[in-house]
Length: 377
Image (tube, rainbow, N blue to C red; front, top):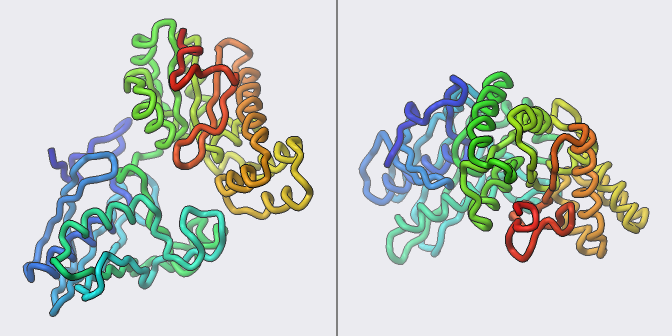
């Protein structure tokens, strides 16, 4: 079933939107269609990473010999996103070189430092949007030809000043991001209201068993796809981890398993139960401290502290044989949460990397083989 932007629905009365990744995916697909067929279009349908099909309006279409360009206006719904209403554009050129090449044009940031999912020197187009573009355009490429896709964001350089990009080492523009393709509105009141409903419904499903709380899309995907956990036993916390757990207690839930990547779970280990950046940070300091407790040298501790993202510490920890660090973070986050809830709930934690690989759990025996049998029984 194909949805239009207007029918994406809402959360707590606030409208959903679509990501910058979806905007670029749609612009690239529409421009490719026009370059190949020589016909203009004012809409394009794309399949999002979450499997949904979305019909997106196309603006500023132009066609030349062997090329075409167009823009998509990003719609963030009611999420307070600085890119809402701005143009994300693509120019597609048919090439004699095989394959699909994606390059960054005006307003697209360039990665200058290590630690991000994209290597230095590359345009800041994250892996998921890039994958979607390559998939869609490969299917449209003429036989014996290739495509060059230039992504541009006319207001990108100015918009970047209102984001964290400069701090992350992304220069000259903004990033093209998104994991599901959909923007969920993040009004605090609306999100808490939706959590209230989800927890209340889930409490009827889990009975005496555990409720599964992923801290983001990575944890949710892991639970559903690898462990076949039913959706009705999963509640996404967003940033509101502490609030969600308090609601669980209010609804009589006795067990929870929290799954999050190192950037999220490390905040819990530091005693920060609202993981929004405005509520505090200290992720790198926490990882560095536990790496030190696991035997890291001063130079390795400094290397971790010099990173931009906690996720970038994972390969360093593995390189140095300091995997005990992961266990410390899982254990400490579980202890902090237990203290926060005054021991009123049994909690287990699972730490993952950005690919969804489980790095550690606490208690360590919470898993049995490839299931959560030890915890759910």
